[in-house]
Structure formats: structure tokens, C-alpha cells
Length: 331
Length: 96
Image (cartoon, rainbow over all chains, first blue to last red):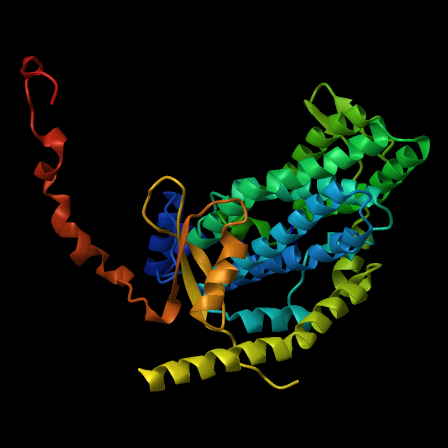
């Protein structure tokens, strides 16, 4: 999802009997539904895994500002511009909540940025696709935020206290994101000109499969899920969430009069779910490995922002130190 | 690029609309207290959540240790008589 392909131990989940006494007590706390707090005992692998997952989630929020920031100056009305600005500002905030949660695990903010910039840590593959028209702002809000919400709602119950609390704040704020996207789609697909309808359909065509990829590889290929689920840092399997997303989104597309670009998409009376085609997983791995249409551009933009802001960070720190020194002398 | 020093971490406490106590909402980095308040406004009160902000540098907080859980909280566990439900008052005594 916002954190796809987070590597855990890669081994089968050990049974309680196989664990050390400390790790067994830890696992039992999780099984009882207790929250783990920063200073409490946790196995090293749990800590490392969480740093990777929360870090990747935070990076996704921050990099996720770029495809939308692209359209702020070109929004069609002042109201749409204000809406989009508020959404992008929220994403900055969500990134900050998550960085703080990661920092409680003993990694510093600068280390997290460093790992993003040198490619050791990833962000969601979805943000490596370009946003070509205004209709993409509709499709991103509707599909991308829709998919994100589907993953984030259950994470409010995750076992690590600071992460769960950050997710509660994020979920509370995020439902407006999806609604503003759908609102744009309604304006273009239902109430717009034929040309606007075509733009909306084109945006859906381009964002459908990348949105399905956000949930990560199929369960049968997801080697790290079982341990993460035992630790309750992942609450549902990738395929469960993907199915839920398709089930919710297909009727919404129908409402808009748009066609999901999948000939196999069909309601299945027997299963009570929609049948649908899997995305092209080769494309997914390719984008994740840096070869998507915008990987280089996104990362370069982040690195440039960090480097260009260095003098501001240093200047403000120097000013604060000078003021503190003056105050100490005066006192 | 020279390695610059990371801004210190501040813990943020906000009092909401309804006369409740300040409540811990999260943390952020800022060069000083004044800037921490301004950043807290942007990060934690984008939807009118607060009427007052406290900021405390994280390194100034002294916290109880998780291993003290037993000795700190155990003594109050067996004092059930500190709760009103311990005292059985007959119904005909009226509302109390």
C-alpha cells in the first residue's frame, strides 16, 4: 500500500514455543491486543520492520505531494485551488505525524531522509506515475486516496501505539481527500462537456491498474505478510484489501458513467464479489526498482528541496542559538 | 553539502474547545520554542482543534520507566474501597 513490499524476516512465523521467554511475553501482549509503547521491550526485528514500514509510509505522504502540487497553479477555479492546497498541506502534515512515530523507534529524521534520498527506503509506486490533466486530480483523490484509506483504517488498530495514534489522526482528516477527488470526477464525467468526459475516462484508464498495485503483490507472492500480521503491523492481506477496493470502486465508476479498463470485471453472484484482472506485476516490480515514468524526477525534486533548504535550516538554528545565548547573558 | 545539525524535537500539547486539559498530540522539530508553536499551529490545528498550545523540548521530559510498572501501580490495585461501587447502599436510601 503506502508501504508496499516491506521486508520482514522472510522466514516462517515462529510458534510461541520457539520464541525466547522475552519474545514470547511480547507476542502474548500483542495477541491480547495491548499496545506496545516506545520504551518498552520489543524484538529487534519488530523495531526494524516498523521503521521500514512507517518510514515508507511517511515518504509516500511527502513524495505524494508532488503529483498534485503540479496542478495547484493550474486548478480550474479558485475554489478547486483552495481545496487542492488544503489536501496537499494535509499530506505534509501526515508525513510529519508518521516521521515522528518512526523517530520514537530510535531512528532520526535526518537518517530517514537520507535513506529516502539514497534509495535505501522506498515510497509507494503510485507516485511514480505522471499527472497529465486536471482529471488526474479527480482520479488521484478518488482512487489513490480511496485505496490508501482502505489500508489505513484497519491500521488504526495496529500494535505500535505511536503508529496507531498517527493513523487515527490521518484517517479522521483523509476522508475529505477522497470526496474532493470524486467531486471533480462528477463535475467532469457527469456534468461536464464530452471533452471533459473523455479526460475523466482517460484518467481512470491510466490510474486503475497502478491503484490496484498499491496493495502490493498477490498474497501467494507476499513473503513478508505472515510475520507482519502476527505482529499486527499489517491487519489484512494484500488480496483482501484489493478485493474490497474493487468491490467499492466498481459501482462508483458505474455511477460516474465511466468504464473500468478491465474486460474481465464482472459481478460474481456466487462469491458476492467482483471478478477482476490482476495488474501487470512485472510493471509493478519495474516501477518499484526505479524504472517508472517519474521515479528520477520525483527523487530529484525531493533531494533538491532538501539541499536548497539547508541554508534556511542552518540559519534558523544559528539564530535560535544566538537568541538563547543573549537571553542567558541578560539573565 | 555540509552536515547540518538537526533541529531539536518538541512535544506538543493542545487544549481543545471544550475546557479540557492540554493533551499530548504528537511532536515536531523546530529551532526554538517560538517556532515550535508556529509549526504546531500548522501541523496540529489545521481544523480548528485548539485554543491553546504548549510546547516542551522532548529532552526536558522525565518519564517513568516501563519496568517500574509493577512497583508504581501495583499498590493501588488492591484498594477497591477507593471506588464508589465498593460501598453497598440500600436502594431505599435514595439517590447518592
